[in-house]
Amino acid sequence: MDKKLCLNILAYHNVAGKSRLSYTSVSRDLFEKHLNLLLKSGLQFFFESEVYKGEFLYNHNKVLVTFDDGYEGLFYHVLPLIGKFRFSPLVFVPAGFIGKKNYWDFSPFGHLKHLTRDMLIDMAKNGFVIGAHSISHTDLRRCEKKVLHAEICDSKKLLEDIIGKEVYAFAYPFGLYDRRVMEVVKSCGYKYAFATSNGIKGNPYAIERALVYFIDINPLFLLKYPECFLFRVRNRLISTLSSLTPLYKRFIYRHGKG
Ligand SMILES: [Zn+2]
Image 1 (spheres, helix red, strand yellow):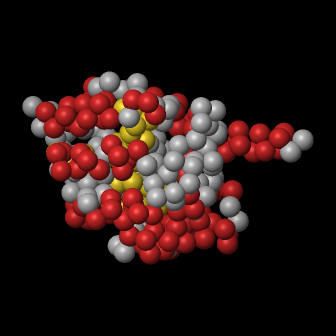
Image 2 (spheres, rainbow, N blue to C red):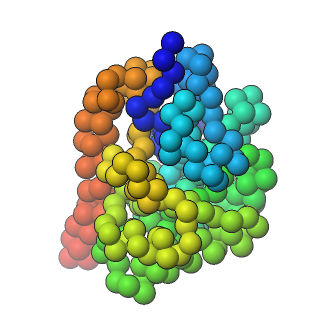
């Protein structure tokens, strides 16, 4: 059986208990089902040392599970699964929102809580790889030079001070980046930067990921479909919608101010 996937890096947001579901969350039951499906099809997950070496860039017989935004649901619902499934998830944390709610997001159904400092320390000791996701979760393409540098370099330093380990991976907020943003990520000392549907093949600073949502009962079907065609179309649509969030926010802010 061919185990190889067209996309081997999954991008989730939150994992939640039944009462805390939102459009960016998958339930713990569904998340566990996904992991079981991947294992049953003969795939394995990457460990911490393999993540550091960037093996996910070329080994498509293993899967890297990533989470954007660092919600506290990961502490309650994913940390307990680390031993059972033997995997090292990579979680991207907006360093200015540690222990706070996600007020950076346009969220008509209520705001989710981000991981606290203590949770991050615990998770970094117990199998999670912690990556940075800027300070304020903003569209980095619109930041002027000094702010851009602070968003990218200071988030690395802040997280490293908390967990006592190197932070070498970055994810672009809303998946939005350009050449200038990418160059700053490199200059701040990151080894890898993750995009969403807008990755560039072979570029470790624009890594493509498959966005997974609660509608994905069996993501394997999409991930094995020739060339990931369906997944890429779906990914592109969702990325476009999510990249509109900063626009919504600017619109609401302007009109709220009257
Ligand atoms: Zn994000």
